[in-house]
Image 1: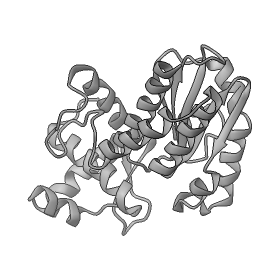
Image 2: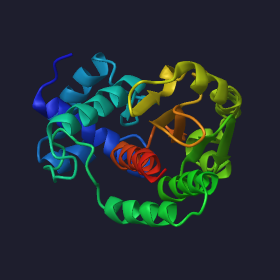
Image 3: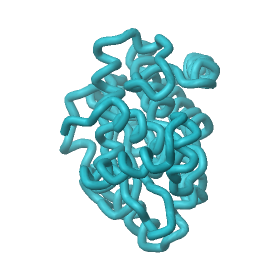
Length: 252
């Protein structure tokens, strides 16, 4: 899929604005941001919608990202992190990187301090998971031997996406089957992201699963990560989950 630079910028802006406000993003807001006419923005939105990257939930509403739109955005983050300094600053709405968005350096420091102060491997993993819950507002998860440690379920379910009972049930189904799936899937990459319908179970949950694989005293295939709504700050969350996995592997 070949998008123009402006289409990429508009898509990324919609994703980032929607993560902040949890309401559809309109053309007037984007026109002010890009200093162009609303008609220009609407024309570009129509093209993005035809590509399946954004959708209009109601006739009079703005646009929201689709799972495909989030996937395009996340792939851009990953691709650019492989070729650029991951902590370098980038221009607003340029191709994003797995960099440190505002506030992430402080969050990374908090994570490091808490994880490094624990006395046992089990306490270290639990502290890392608890810290991810606090720092991301998502549900946190980690494997300790053959057990799955979960924290922050109430934080997850207070998100506006999960007022729908059907989605809550889909999340519950995903969590009920997550531990055996992790053992079977054994992702090969250090960081894995499953967005919305990409999740192996609970495809209608409207949630994203971001996990990092690491070696621990319990297993060479240990995992830590978060489960949150598809609407989230992927730059920050991916950076923190990746850091948590790296810190745990180095710390044992």
